[in-house]
Length: 380
Image (cartoon, rainbow, N blue to C red; front, side, top):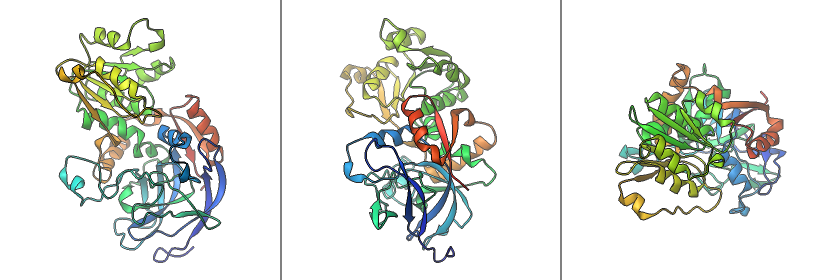
């Protein structure tokens, strides 16, 4: 292996998607050396996020295959590219699907985490040169969210990685690189839930349960969980849910039950399903005058949101949330510290641990709604 000053290309195993919805195939891939301001990371743990599955199934971008998915990951810096001073070989890092350049209009505004240079990457390439760092037999393999953690090694922009303490368990903090942080941030940073308030959460997956945890830590008086899976009732209670509603057991609209439980409507509602139809229900479930609805889910179909104008005219607000409003480099270390100090719980969201070779089984669990987070362990 070449030294950090002149890293060579690496050949390693990666789980490659050759077509939408087709089982991942373990392939030998070549991972190029990091370019300027990039780092190459040996992935240690990666968890499967619902958005990985949604995009793997999607036929909207058939040209972006073969592709390596995965973005919720932890790893160790293996080599650094030219100009990188923030990281050194051996540093423990979290990868993040949106970066922070710290110099663009959004980064310096203090109002947004939507970095203009390192925002959400949708073309399957690196931010810097619009090319890939993966190849098979000389042909390019596309990236996902400029992270692609379903590979033993990957290359990310240094602005899309966060240094973490080597003492925290990498097979658990990987959840902080997306799902858990997204939920906590939606509750704390985007909604800024106040003590004694009422909350309703649609969808009790990893993100929804993290919203519940955030609401509980803020002192919300009522936290209603809405999910069609009855098994989520017990899990929800462990994360702060006070009342559980299964829409399939109702003979009236969900919003009517929520209004009854909250004396006219919740102060805050959260859409964590990835269904734009649920956004309207969430709006109807919150209070006239000040009710705030935050939408976090990535829709699998019908991206347009429709709602009666009177819902907004009466004083409700609809807000979107990407990564909980957190700036990764500025804010993620604080969440890692909270985990290390046992101020937030993450471990209870991991329902399965699997070796990399079983990644297709992990996808099946997610498709069948039989897991929250499945952590995939790379061979070390």
